Length: 82
Image (cartoon, rainbow, N blue to C red; front, side, top):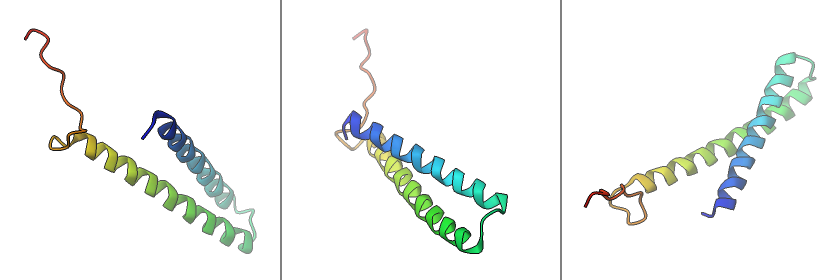
């Protein structure tokens, strides 16, 4: 994954979280009608699932990078005194 793609994913995640927080705040205020609340709930569930998926993908990337049997995994620095 390129640095730009990773940055885009972080921005998408942050935007989705901000939207989700806004929806929760609106619903907690109690000012929405039942129909509005149902629509907000549906949108909130979709945002939650999107965020959950993005977090799972990030976790998989970390696991791949941390796996010593993976040739693309992070390797410790060689001892500089050798």
